[in-house]
Image (tube, rainbow, N blue to C red):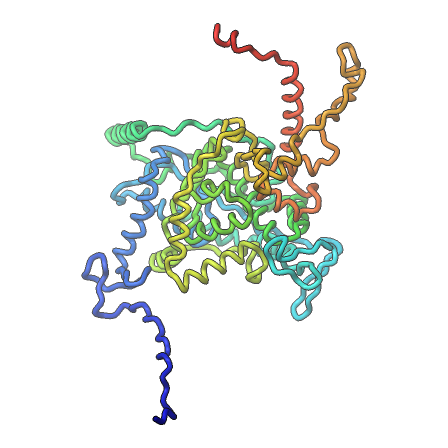
Length: 557
């Protein structure tokens, strides 16, 4: 038989059906009456009122389920001006209003960290101009895919735009910074909460105590929370019966700053120059982003402690936490995922970081801000306009968002995985309250020199001790001239950089490799590292002089 012109091949695959679009006949999935205005998931169309109730319920349910914030407690809202943190501030503002069904009972405050420092080009660097690939000649270290998981540039060097001209080191002029602050100030005044505007340069005036973990109170039982709520309600009832108006937004409970304009003063030129030099010294964009997050966290912690805030709220959304989880895995921070992505972060002890927006996706946040006119301020970040493979953060963000467009359950799957992580370190020296902590991220160091299966175990076993004891000289014995201080150098290593690196976790150690010298670091970090080294040396000296009780004496006592 003739088969010319006949095709016995398989039929061409059909395109997957597109998600149904809301039509005039379609109704809201919640009330079944009003016409939908948004579709947050496939087939889930909400009207304006139902979407607002759905959005608010997520926020209130996250706070009510955990019950970490007690009535009358002072909470600092970390507002960056972005969509997610702006939506968080607006949720708190609506929760404190008089017409709210269940009013929030804590006392809020807002902090805005201005991280857009004015950068001056470092000597010896050639700017990266449009149309010409000019490379900075001050850095000769090569960064390939095998070392940092990134795509190398020609010559093994990074263009100047990635060295110090984006985001927090984007080269914004003082006029541009003043313009941004002029946009921030009306929003803060409209909110009505006590607010604090601080510049990132103020990290150079912090004290070493900010890196010390204060004593943490044990978790209060369920009965204690209910008793605190009843006591707060009785107090409000007494104030209302006495004719005095109760606090509407917390203004009466928390006094506002006396001179708000003083918070907007430009930082000192020396501090701006020091911060610019610090970010110019960092070789990779990945390490620069991690350093910026660390300094910003230290500054917020300092403000919270100085003004008596016991909780700090951040606007990390579900999408952002999913990206952060995968990024931290790539950065070697897998041991601290429960603290970095969980609802609460108790690493600081007296100040707890909470993330009430972790159930909201970026799509829901964008819809809510658009429908209800939530104001926000755009500030350039470190990776603004950076290519996809410029850093691990950008690469992982593009990977997750690309998967999300093809498979809509990607973000939720990664997020649900993070909820199963527990904060239970294994038995060892990192389980106590006075356990060694990382100098930068302040997480407990899970040091186990016997565990050589991991990279961190290999590093800790190769450097079993931070102390190098020198032989005792004549002055070290009783009656010797101790006033001369000849043994004061025994507590210091020959290499101060190695001494500091040994006080970091594995992820922070990898990032510090991209900083050629530790001199540009803020002084409070260097001072705390030196203090920890000296304290460890003193403890080692005293341990040899102490007399341990025997088992028989312990049993008799």
